[in-house]
Image (tube, rainbow, N blue to C red):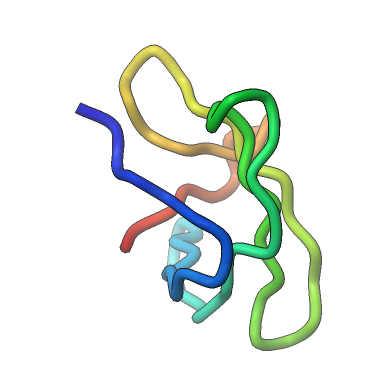
Length: 65
């Protein structure tokens, strides 16, 4: 089951060897896309995959609540 996201929720962006706090700025496409702003100010776009995880398109990061 996918994690339930809504705007303003605190999340953790998980990279291969590190993590970074972030906040969901916007939910798009009926909940299938999440726009996240990291603590460093980066804006990342996550897509809900068939695995029920939110991943960046290049699969370099995933979300954890």
